[in-house]
Length: 451
Image (cartoon, rainbow, N blue to C red; front, side):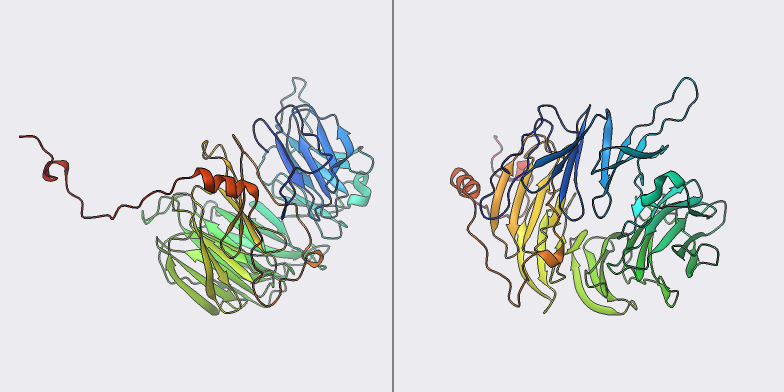
Protein backbone atom coordinates (compact mmCIF):
# COMPACT_ATOMS: atom_id res chain seq x y z
CA UNK A 1 0.00 0.00 0.00
CA UNK A 2 1.69 3.17 -1.22
CA UNK A 3 0.68 6.82 -1.50
CA UNK A 4 -0.10 6.47 -5.19
CA UNK A 5 -0.79 2.76 -5.59
CA UNK A 6 -2.14 -0.43 -4.01
CA UNK A 7 -1.39 -3.90 -5.28
CA UNK A 8 -1.62 -7.63 -4.60
CA UNK A 9 1.35 -9.64 -5.86
CA UNK A 10 1.73 -13.41 -6.23
CA UNK A 11 4.61 -15.04 -4.36
CA UNK A 12 7.24 -17.56 -5.45
CA UNK A 13 8.01 -18.29 -8.23
CA UNK A 14 6.55 -15.61 -10.51
CA UNK A 15 5.89 -12.44 -8.43
CA UNK A 16 3.24 -11.15 -10.85
CA UNK A 17 0.22 -8.99 -9.95
CA UNK A 18 -2.79 -11.03 -8.79
CA UNK A 19 -5.18 -11.58 -11.71
CA UNK A 20 -8.53 -9.84 -11.44
CA UNK A 21 -7.51 -7.29 -8.79
CA UNK A 22 -8.20 -3.76 -9.99
CA UNK A 23 -6.29 -1.24 -7.84
CA UNK A 24 -8.27 1.81 -6.65
CA UNK A 25 -7.63 5.15 -8.34
CA UNK A 26 -7.35 7.09 -5.05
CA UNK A 27 -4.89 6.50 -2.16
CA UNK A 28 -5.91 3.82 0.34
CA UNK A 29 -5.75 4.66 4.06
CA UNK A 30 -5.14 1.11 5.31
CA UNK A 31 -5.35 -2.54 4.26
CA UNK A 32 -5.80 -5.81 6.13
CA UNK A 33 -6.05 -9.57 5.64
CA UNK A 34 -8.16 -11.89 7.78
CA UNK A 35 -6.15 -14.24 10.04
CA UNK A 36 -6.81 -17.24 7.79
CA UNK A 37 -5.87 -15.28 4.63
CA UNK A 38 -9.32 -15.87 3.11
CA UNK A 39 -10.38 -12.22 3.02
CA UNK A 40 -8.71 -8.92 2.17
CA UNK A 41 -10.01 -5.37 2.73
CA UNK A 42 -8.85 -1.83 2.16
CA UNK A 43 -10.20 1.59 3.15
CA UNK A 44 -10.43 4.56 0.78
CA UNK A 45 -11.49 8.08 1.88
CA UNK A 46 -15.15 7.30 1.02
CA UNK A 47 -15.53 3.50 0.89
CA UNK A 48 -14.34 0.20 2.39
CA UNK A 49 -14.05 -2.78 0.02
CA UNK A 50 -13.87 -6.44 1.12
CA UNK A 51 -12.48 -9.07 -1.26
CA UNK A 52 -12.08 -12.80 -1.33
CA UNK A 53 -8.27 -12.92 -1.36
CA UNK A 54 -8.07 -15.90 -3.74
CA UNK A 55 -8.86 -14.47 -7.16
CA UNK A 56 -9.51 -10.96 -5.74
CA UNK A 57 -13.29 -11.23 -6.03
CA UNK A 58 -15.19 -8.23 -4.59
CA UNK A 59 -17.60 -9.36 -1.83
CA UNK A 60 -18.80 -6.14 -0.18
CA UNK A 61 -18.55 -2.40 -0.68
CA UNK A 62 -19.36 -0.38 2.44
CA UNK A 63 -20.01 3.34 1.92
CA UNK A 64 -18.01 4.49 4.93
CA UNK A 65 -16.06 7.75 4.85
CA UNK A 66 -12.89 8.52 6.86
CA UNK A 67 -12.08 4.94 8.00
CA UNK A 68 -8.41 4.67 9.00
CA UNK A 69 -8.30 1.29 10.80
CA UNK A 70 -9.67 -2.14 9.81
CA UNK A 71 -9.70 -5.45 11.65
CA UNK A 72 -11.19 -8.88 10.87
CA UNK A 73 -12.51 -11.29 13.49
CA UNK A 74 -10.52 -14.61 13.69
CA UNK A 75 -12.83 -16.58 11.39
CA UNK A 76 -13.56 -13.66 9.08
CA UNK A 77 -17.22 -13.29 10.11
CA UNK A 78 -17.03 -9.65 11.21
CA UNK A 79 -15.13 -6.54 10.13
CA UNK A 80 -14.42 -3.75 12.63
CA UNK A 81 -13.74 -0.21 11.38
CA UNK A 82 -12.45 2.83 13.28
CA UNK A 83 -12.55 6.49 12.31
CA UNK A 84 -11.36 9.56 14.18
CA UNK A 85 -13.95 10.70 16.76
CA UNK A 86 -15.87 13.87 15.89
CA UNK A 87 -17.57 16.24 18.35
CA UNK A 88 -21.21 16.82 17.46
CA UNK A 89 -22.73 20.21 18.28
CA UNK A 90 -25.82 18.67 19.89
CA UNK A 91 -23.60 16.71 22.31
CA UNK A 92 -24.44 13.22 21.02
CA UNK A 93 -21.64 10.68 21.11
CA UNK A 94 -19.96 9.83 17.81
CA UNK A 95 -20.03 6.04 17.45
CA UNK A 96 -16.76 5.75 15.55
CA UNK A 97 -16.05 2.02 16.09
CA UNK A 98 -18.42 -0.06 13.98
CA UNK A 99 -18.82 -3.77 13.40
CA UNK A 100 -20.19 -5.18 10.15
CA UNK A 101 -21.28 -8.62 9.02
CA UNK A 102 -19.07 -9.58 6.08
CA UNK A 103 -21.68 -11.87 4.52
CA UNK A 104 -24.48 -9.26 4.48
CA UNK A 105 -22.56 -5.98 4.78
CA UNK A 106 -24.96 -4.68 7.45
CA UNK A 107 -23.83 -2.74 10.52
CA UNK A 108 -24.42 -4.92 13.61
CA UNK A 109 -23.27 -2.66 16.44
CA UNK A 110 -21.37 0.60 17.01
CA UNK A 111 -19.39 2.00 19.97
CA UNK A 112 -17.66 5.22 20.96
CA UNK A 113 -13.90 4.59 21.05
CA UNK A 114 -11.77 7.70 21.49
CA UNK A 115 -8.29 6.18 21.57
CA UNK A 116 -6.76 4.72 18.43
CA UNK A 117 -4.36 2.65 20.53
CA UNK A 118 -6.05 -0.63 21.47
CA UNK A 119 -9.17 0.35 19.49
CA UNK A 120 -10.17 -3.09 18.24
CA UNK A 121 -12.30 -5.70 19.97
CA UNK A 122 -10.54 -8.93 20.87
CA UNK A 123 -12.31 -12.17 19.94
CA UNK A 124 -11.95 -15.73 21.19
CA UNK A 125 -10.68 -18.15 18.51
CA UNK A 126 -14.19 -19.56 18.00
CA UNK A 127 -15.73 -16.04 17.92
CA UNK A 128 -18.04 -17.07 20.77
CA UNK A 129 -17.09 -13.95 22.77
CA UNK A 130 -15.56 -10.52 22.18
CA UNK A 131 -14.05 -8.19 24.79
CA UNK A 132 -13.15 -4.53 25.00
CA UNK A 133 -11.84 -2.20 27.70
CA UNK A 134 -14.00 0.83 28.52
CA UNK A 135 -12.35 2.98 31.20
CA UNK A 136 -11.59 0.55 34.06
CA UNK A 137 -14.27 -1.93 32.90
CA UNK A 138 -13.69 -5.08 30.84
CA UNK A 139 -16.86 -5.70 28.83
CA UNK A 140 -17.78 -9.04 27.25
CA UNK A 141 -20.12 -9.46 24.26
CA UNK A 142 -21.58 -12.41 22.37
CA UNK A 143 -21.02 -11.72 18.65
CA UNK A 144 -23.96 -13.98 17.70
CA UNK A 145 -26.17 -11.64 19.78
CA UNK A 146 -24.69 -8.14 19.52
CA UNK A 147 -28.13 -6.65 20.23
CA UNK A 148 -28.04 -8.04 23.80
CA UNK A 149 -25.15 -5.70 24.59
CA UNK A 150 -22.75 -6.46 27.47
CA UNK A 151 -23.26 -10.04 28.72
CA UNK A 152 -20.51 -10.00 31.37
CA UNK A 153 -18.19 -7.39 32.86
CA UNK A 154 -15.61 -6.81 35.54
CA UNK A 155 -14.18 -3.58 36.90
CA UNK A 156 -10.41 -3.50 37.47
CA UNK A 157 -9.34 -0.22 39.07
CA UNK A 158 -6.74 1.60 36.94
CA UNK A 159 -6.88 -0.89 34.03
CA UNK A 160 -5.05 0.48 30.97
CA UNK A 161 -4.55 -2.60 28.75
CA UNK A 162 -6.12 -6.03 28.24
CA UNK A 163 -5.17 -9.08 26.22
CA UNK A 164 -7.38 -12.08 25.48
CA UNK A 165 -5.50 -15.37 25.21
CA UNK A 166 -5.70 -17.70 22.24
CA UNK A 167 -6.61 -21.34 22.90
CA UNK A 168 -9.84 -23.17 23.66
CA UNK A 169 -10.21 -22.07 27.30
CA UNK A 170 -9.54 -18.34 26.99
CA UNK A 171 -8.20 -16.19 29.80
CA UNK A 172 -7.95 -12.42 29.88
CA UNK A 173 -4.91 -10.55 31.20
CA UNK A 174 -5.66 -7.09 32.63
CA UNK A 175 -2.82 -4.63 33.25
CA UNK A 176 -3.18 -1.64 35.59
CA UNK A 177 -0.43 1.00 35.55
CA UNK A 178 1.33 2.39 38.62
CA UNK A 179 -0.59 5.36 40.01
CA UNK A 180 -0.20 7.67 43.03
CA UNK A 181 2.17 5.34 44.82
CA UNK A 182 0.00 2.28 44.16
CA UNK A 183 1.95 -0.51 42.46
CA UNK A 184 1.13 -1.67 38.95
CA UNK A 185 -0.52 -5.07 38.58
CA UNK A 186 -1.45 -7.78 36.14
CA UNK A 187 -4.48 -9.96 36.85
CA UNK A 188 -5.58 -13.00 34.86
CA UNK A 189 -9.24 -14.07 34.81
CA UNK A 190 -10.89 -17.02 33.14
CA UNK A 191 -13.41 -15.77 30.62
CA UNK A 192 -16.90 -16.35 32.02
CA UNK A 193 -15.60 -16.62 35.61
CA UNK A 194 -15.32 -12.96 36.60
CA UNK A 195 -17.10 -13.38 39.93
CA UNK A 196 -14.23 -15.09 41.75
CA UNK A 197 -10.71 -13.84 42.35
CA UNK A 198 -8.19 -13.84 39.49
CA UNK A 199 -6.49 -17.17 38.69
CA UNK A 200 -3.13 -15.41 38.78
CA UNK A 201 -2.00 -11.92 39.79
CA UNK A 202 1.22 -10.04 40.43
CA UNK A 203 2.02 -6.51 41.59
CA UNK A 204 5.21 -4.57 40.88
CA UNK A 205 6.58 -1.04 40.68
CA UNK A 206 8.24 0.78 37.75
CA UNK A 207 5.47 0.16 35.22
CA UNK A 208 3.64 3.00 33.45
CA UNK A 209 2.76 0.95 30.38
CA UNK A 210 3.00 -2.67 29.30
CA UNK A 211 3.16 -5.00 26.34
CA UNK A 212 1.37 -8.35 26.80
CA UNK A 213 2.17 -11.45 24.69
CA UNK A 214 0.47 -14.83 25.14
CA UNK A 215 2.00 -18.06 23.89
CA UNK A 216 0.15 -19.80 21.04
CA UNK A 217 -1.76 -22.24 23.26
CA UNK A 218 -2.74 -19.53 25.77
CA UNK A 219 -1.24 -21.13 28.89
CA UNK A 220 1.48 -18.56 29.69
CA UNK A 221 1.78 -14.81 29.26
CA UNK A 222 4.83 -12.54 29.04
CA UNK A 223 4.57 -8.96 30.25
CA UNK A 224 7.06 -6.26 29.29
CA UNK A 225 6.73 -3.25 31.58
CA UNK A 226 8.14 0.19 30.91
CA UNK A 227 8.40 3.51 32.78
CA UNK A 228 8.18 6.87 31.02
CA UNK A 229 11.32 8.10 32.80
CA UNK A 230 14.44 6.27 33.99
CA UNK A 231 15.11 7.56 37.50
CA UNK A 232 18.69 6.30 37.38
CA UNK A 233 19.26 8.53 34.29
CA UNK A 234 20.93 5.67 32.42
CA UNK A 235 18.40 5.37 29.64
CA UNK A 236 16.57 7.86 27.46
CA UNK A 237 13.62 5.48 27.10
CA UNK A 238 12.79 4.65 30.70
CA UNK A 239 13.29 1.41 32.61
CA UNK A 240 11.97 -1.96 31.44
CA UNK A 241 11.12 -5.17 33.26
CA UNK A 242 9.73 -8.57 32.27
CA UNK A 243 7.44 -11.06 34.01
CA UNK A 244 6.15 -14.52 33.10
CA UNK A 245 2.82 -15.80 34.47
CA UNK A 246 0.86 -18.98 33.88
CA UNK A 247 -2.89 -18.58 33.27
CA UNK A 248 -3.67 -21.31 35.80
CA UNK A 249 -1.79 -19.52 38.58
CA UNK A 250 0.76 -22.27 39.15
CA UNK A 251 3.77 -20.16 38.21
CA UNK A 252 4.82 -16.52 38.12
CA UNK A 253 8.20 -14.84 38.30
CA UNK A 254 10.29 -11.94 37.13
CA UNK A 255 12.52 -12.75 34.17
CA UNK A 256 15.95 -11.88 35.57
CA UNK A 257 18.29 -10.55 32.89
CA UNK A 258 22.03 -10.43 33.49
CA UNK A 259 22.88 -7.29 31.49
CA UNK A 260 21.96 -3.70 32.27
CA UNK A 261 19.88 -1.76 29.79
CA UNK A 262 16.50 -1.80 28.07
CA UNK A 263 14.63 -4.83 26.74
CA UNK A 264 14.53 -4.30 22.96
CA UNK A 265 12.30 -7.17 21.85
CA UNK A 266 10.85 -10.52 22.95
CA UNK A 267 8.95 -13.30 21.21
CA UNK A 268 7.36 -16.67 21.95
CA UNK A 269 8.33 -19.71 19.91
CA UNK A 270 5.30 -21.14 18.04
CA UNK A 271 5.79 -24.34 20.10
CA UNK A 272 4.68 -22.26 23.17
CA UNK A 273 7.42 -23.83 25.29
CA UNK A 274 10.18 -21.23 24.99
CA UNK A 275 10.75 -17.54 24.33
CA UNK A 276 13.59 -15.28 23.27
CA UNK A 277 14.56 -11.90 24.73
CA UNK A 278 16.92 -9.25 23.28
CA UNK A 279 18.14 -6.95 26.06
CA UNK A 280 20.87 -4.70 27.42
CA UNK A 281 22.94 -1.78 26.17
CA UNK A 282 24.51 -2.32 22.75
CA UNK A 283 25.82 -4.79 21.79
CA UNK A 284 22.66 -6.39 23.21
CA UNK A 285 22.40 -9.94 24.54
CA UNK A 286 19.91 -12.49 23.22
CA UNK A 287 18.74 -15.38 25.41
CA UNK A 288 16.36 -18.28 24.91
CA UNK A 289 14.35 -19.31 28.01
CA UNK A 290 11.89 -22.13 28.71
CA UNK A 291 8.49 -21.84 30.44
CA UNK A 292 10.17 -21.92 33.85
CA UNK A 293 12.59 -19.11 32.88
CA UNK A 294 15.52 -21.50 32.79
CA UNK A 295 18.18 -20.58 30.22
CA UNK A 296 18.01 -22.75 27.09
CA UNK A 297 20.68 -20.93 25.08
CA UNK A 298 22.79 -17.77 25.23
CA UNK A 299 23.38 -16.24 21.79
CA UNK A 300 25.96 -13.84 23.22
CA UNK A 301 26.29 -10.12 22.53
CA UNK A 302 25.53 -8.68 19.08
CA UNK A 303 24.03 -5.45 17.71
CA UNK A 304 20.45 -6.79 17.66
CA UNK A 305 17.10 -5.26 18.65
CA UNK A 306 14.66 -7.63 16.89
CA UNK A 307 13.78 -11.32 17.29
CA UNK A 308 11.26 -13.38 15.33
CA UNK A 309 10.60 -17.14 15.09
CA UNK A 310 9.37 -18.49 11.78
CA UNK A 311 5.82 -19.96 11.99
CA UNK A 312 7.21 -23.51 12.22
CA UNK A 313 9.56 -22.56 15.09
CA UNK A 314 12.51 -23.98 13.15
CA UNK A 315 14.36 -20.74 12.31
CA UNK A 316 14.98 -17.59 14.35
CA UNK A 317 15.72 -14.17 12.82
CA UNK A 318 17.89 -11.91 15.01
CA UNK A 319 18.37 -8.45 13.56
CA UNK A 320 19.43 -4.90 14.23
CA UNK A 321 17.08 -2.34 12.64
CA UNK A 322 16.39 1.36 13.21
CA UNK A 323 19.67 3.06 14.06
CA UNK A 324 21.55 -0.24 13.62
CA UNK A 325 23.03 -1.56 10.36
CA UNK A 326 20.14 -3.81 9.28
CA UNK A 327 21.95 -7.16 9.44
CA UNK A 328 19.71 -10.22 9.96
CA UNK A 329 21.21 -13.42 11.40
CA UNK A 330 19.14 -16.51 10.59
CA UNK A 331 19.59 -19.22 13.26
CA UNK A 332 18.62 -22.89 12.93
CA UNK A 333 16.79 -23.69 16.21
CA UNK A 334 17.51 -27.41 15.85
CA UNK A 335 21.28 -27.12 16.31
CA UNK A 336 21.47 -23.40 17.27
CA UNK A 337 23.93 -22.62 14.47
CA UNK A 338 23.88 -19.62 12.17
CA UNK A 339 22.48 -20.42 8.71
CA UNK A 340 23.35 -17.08 7.10
CA UNK A 341 23.55 -13.32 7.56
CA UNK A 342 21.36 -11.10 5.39
CA UNK A 343 22.32 -7.49 4.79
CA UNK A 344 19.06 -5.48 4.71
CA UNK A 345 19.85 -1.84 5.60
CA UNK A 346 17.05 0.70 6.20
CA UNK A 347 14.51 -2.02 7.01
CA UNK A 348 11.46 -0.70 8.84
CA UNK A 349 9.34 -3.89 8.65
CA UNK A 350 10.42 -7.53 8.64
CA UNK A 351 8.24 -10.68 8.64
CA UNK A 352 8.50 -14.42 7.96
CA UNK A 353 6.39 -15.96 5.21
CA UNK A 354 3.67 -18.41 6.35
CA UNK A 355 5.71 -21.37 5.00
CA UNK A 356 8.75 -20.21 7.03
CA UNK A 357 11.11 -20.24 4.05
CA UNK A 358 11.25 -16.53 3.19
CA UNK A 359 11.72 -13.19 4.92
CA UNK A 360 10.03 -10.01 3.70
CA UNK A 361 11.89 -6.79 4.49
CA UNK A 362 10.37 -3.43 3.61
CA UNK A 363 11.58 0.17 3.72
CA UNK A 364 8.49 2.23 4.52
CA UNK A 365 7.43 5.88 4.66
CA UNK A 366 7.17 8.08 6.67
CA UNK A 367 10.19 6.69 8.55
CA UNK A 368 12.29 6.74 5.37
CA UNK A 369 11.15 8.49 2.23
CA UNK A 370 13.85 7.16 -0.11
CA UNK A 371 14.50 3.65 -1.47
CA UNK A 372 11.00 2.54 -0.44
CA UNK A 373 10.09 -0.98 -1.48
CA UNK A 374 9.96 -4.67 -0.62
CA UNK A 375 12.67 -7.34 -0.73
CA UNK A 376 12.02 -11.08 -0.41
CA UNK A 377 14.93 -13.17 0.93
CA UNK A 378 15.23 -16.94 1.13
CA UNK A 379 16.18 -18.25 4.57
CA UNK A 380 19.55 -19.38 3.17
CA UNK A 381 20.41 -15.74 2.45
CA UNK A 382 19.78 -15.21 -1.26
CA UNK A 383 17.69 -12.29 -2.51
CA UNK A 384 14.72 -13.71 -4.43
CA UNK A 385 12.67 -10.64 -5.36
CA UNK A 386 12.80 -6.83 -5.26
CA UNK A 387 9.95 -4.42 -5.84
CA UNK A 388 10.68 -0.72 -5.38
CA UNK A 389 7.59 1.43 -4.77
CA UNK A 390 7.52 5.17 -4.22
CA UNK A 391 6.17 6.25 -0.82
CA UNK A 392 5.33 2.77 0.42
CA UNK A 393 3.38 2.74 3.71
CA UNK A 394 2.38 -0.88 4.32
CA UNK A 395 3.49 -4.33 3.15
CA UNK A 396 2.55 -7.78 4.45
CA UNK A 397 2.28 -11.46 3.56
CA UNK A 398 -1.11 -13.01 2.96
CA UNK A 399 -1.58 -15.18 6.09
CA UNK A 400 -1.94 -18.94 5.69
CA UNK A 401 -2.55 -21.30 8.64
CA UNK A 402 0.58 -23.37 9.42
CA UNK A 403 -1.30 -26.65 8.85
CA UNK A 404 -2.08 -25.59 5.25
CA UNK A 405 1.51 -25.02 4.10
CA UNK A 406 4.11 -27.58 3.06
CA UNK A 407 6.13 -29.18 5.88
CA UNK A 408 9.49 -27.56 6.48
CA UNK A 409 11.39 -30.86 6.37
CA UNK A 410 14.51 -32.00 8.21
CA UNK A 411 17.05 -30.09 6.13
CA UNK A 412 16.65 -26.43 5.19
CA UNK A 413 15.12 -26.26 1.69
CA UNK A 414 17.25 -24.86 -1.16
CA UNK A 415 16.57 -21.38 -2.58
CA UNK A 416 14.50 -21.01 -5.75
CA UNK A 417 15.75 -19.04 -8.77
CA UNK A 418 15.67 -15.26 -8.15
CA UNK A 419 13.07 -13.24 -10.06
CA UNK A 420 13.85 -11.12 -13.13
CA UNK A 421 13.74 -7.97 -10.97
CA UNK A 422 16.75 -9.20 -8.96
CA UNK A 423 18.71 -10.01 -12.12
CA UNK A 424 17.91 -6.58 -13.58
CA UNK A 425 18.99 -4.85 -10.38
CA UNK A 426 22.25 -6.82 -10.30
CA UNK A 427 22.98 -5.79 -13.89
CA UNK A 428 22.45 -2.09 -13.12
CA UNK A 429 24.31 -1.98 -9.81
CA UNK A 430 28.02 -1.33 -10.00
CA UNK A 431 30.15 -3.03 -7.38
CA UNK A 432 31.50 -0.49 -4.92
CA UNK A 433 35.21 -0.97 -4.31
CA UNK A 434 35.88 -1.18 -0.60
CA UNK A 435 38.80 0.98 0.46
CA UNK A 436 40.94 -0.32 3.29
CA UNK A 437 40.18 1.84 6.31
CA UNK A 438 43.42 3.18 7.71
CA UNK A 439 44.04 5.32 10.76
CA UNK A 440 42.31 8.70 10.71
CA UNK A 441 44.52 11.69 9.91
CA UNK A 442 43.22 15.24 10.07
CA UNK A 443 43.35 17.13 6.75
CA UNK A 444 46.43 19.11 7.82
CA UNK A 445 48.46 15.94 8.41
CA UNK A 446 47.69 14.24 5.10
CA UNK A 447 50.59 15.79 3.17
CA UNK A 448 48.11 17.67 0.99
CA UNK A 449 48.32 21.10 2.59
CA UNK A 450 49.68 23.83 0.33
CA UNK A 451 52.68 25.75 1.71
